[in-house]
Length: 188
Image 1 (cartoon, rainbow, N blue to C red):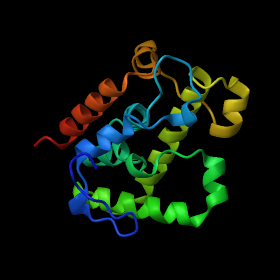
Image 2: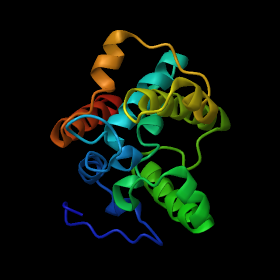
Image 3: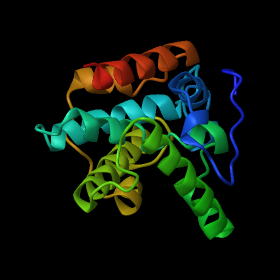
Image 4: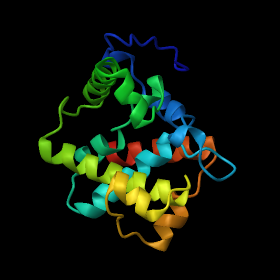
């Protein structure tokens, strides 16, 4: 990692995880394998920020630690990249095992339960699918009917949210906004 940490993918230690490495990596990992419109990739960092906003909109009383868990839901991708779902199915359990171990270490590193409660897991899944619908239709060329088939119904969003979170940012912007959000959620 840029921080100088060495991370064992098979047995990741929470001590080797730094938020700056996560933000840097996620800001440079492309969603949709880079097949999105715009002059910049749509990064996993930007996606994670959108998912956290959608989760909070769905459950306004969501506390900061749970919002942090939502923000970090795709954090393992800073190391292993973002693979499209059909390819994850082809790879099978090996990918999921590595991803789970990394996420557990990341959650431990930041003082979160290794396995979120089922209600939070479901909220993350719903908000992630809502974000995927928006990204698919706004950035990846999906028709609304096709996106509904894969991701379910779209969320209601404001024009400000669409303008702010569904236009790809430069990597440096995504990295800084991710770090800023992390710091706000972890501030005492």
